[in-house]
Length: 288
Image 1 (cartoon, one colour):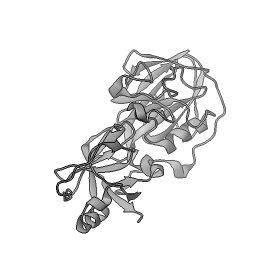
Image 2 (tube, one colour):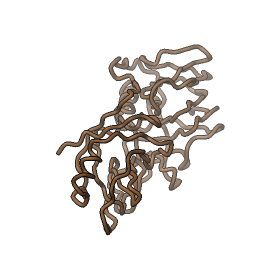
Image 3 (cartoon, one colour):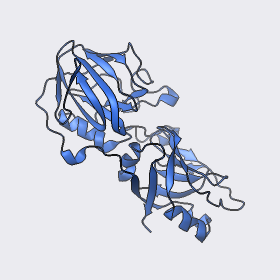
Image 4 (tube, helix red, strand yellow):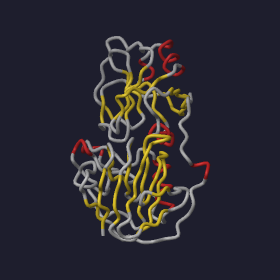
């Protein structure tokens, strides 16, 4: 009982709700980049909210189902086909044995989530199925999927499922505003720099992945003679490098860092950033 991967897309991994209580070993949480969309896909097919599924980034995958099963897709909007016929992903999709499921052109967002009723049969590593590809850990053989892989299914089922609410469909806004709080080292910056950091527009660069996003903005004045011991780093932490540029830690980021954190994005806002595209305008609404 498996899915045969024909085309894997640019970066498709198994992810679940995350790998917790391992940071003291240097192991990131990982897990869904867009928690809201991933949980919606699971809910549509009757899985547990944080159950393992496929996170598909930028380019879609093509697969053949070797068993009858029901799947659901949420998050980024692609054109979807089953046996070369368009399908509506507002509803669950029933696949028969031998059916070909294909994702075509990406229209909105960046990351899509494909859930299979009954879940994926990959091992738990430190309590999670999530892939941490930089460490070769978790998911399917510790890596992104490749053409030719056979992804095992746990208990594939055909279920009625539920519909996707229209308001939960991904739209790519021209301006993305996310809520944040002042970071642990904010008081090490001068007042003018804090005001600048909290008010200016940032643009997502091409250098963005599950570990972190490099942002483009007017340089921030780095604290004079600044030094700090490495300390805990949460996803959503905006670090200021010595050249005044910024790096936003994401799901697979290292668990400690030595750059000052001027702000930290609210954890329930991170799903918005997961769907941001390069050059998109980002503002941080800082609650002080």
